[in-house]
Length: 114
Length: 111
Image (cartoon, rainbow over all chains, first blue to last red; front, top):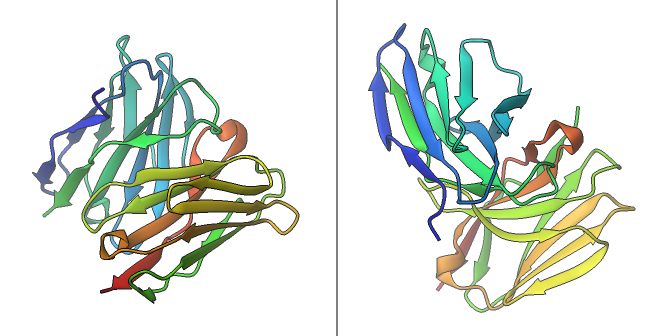
C-alpha cells in the first residue's frame, strides 16, 4: 500500500512569490492535514480537510490556503512568501474524521525562501 | 490553549538499555495519544498510539498512559543505535481535528 506522497521534495522561491505544494493521501483516507515544521520549532498545525471541505485551520495568516479535490488529494498554497516561511511542510492523512485516528505523514516538502 | 511538554534531551543511553521518554499534557479531557519517531531530515513515523490508561506493548516499545497525572511515556527496551532519533509525543486536539505535538526528545543510543 502506498503511503502519503508529497511533491515536490524541494522548492526554492524568492520573497513575494507564490508556492503550491501537493499531497496524495493513503488510499481510503479521507482526511488530510497540513503541518509546518520550522527549524528548531515543533510541528505547527496549518489546515485540515475532509470530504472536500476545510474543517479547521491553525493560527496562520490567510495567505496560507489550500483545497481538497474529489479524489481526496490536496494542495497547499502560500502567497506572498516571506523568509520565515522557510520550513518543512508535512502532509498527513487519516481514515475518517476525528483526531483520535492515527495520522500518517508523507516525506514532506522543504520550502526555502531566498 | 492545549500544550504538550517533553524534555528536549538529548537523552543518551547505552546499547541494550531501556530508554524512557516522557510527556505531559495540559488538557485533562484528551483521549488519544501518539508517539512518532523522526530521524534527522525525515518526516515523523507513527510508532505507537494509546487510548486507555495502562500499558500497551508492541515489540520493543511500550506506551504507558496515566490520565489522572496527565502523563504518557514511551519505553524502548533493548535500545539499538538505529533507535537514535527525535521522539515526538502528540495529543489529539479534540474536535479541532489536528494533533498537538510536543517539541520532541532527542534520543542517542551509544554502541
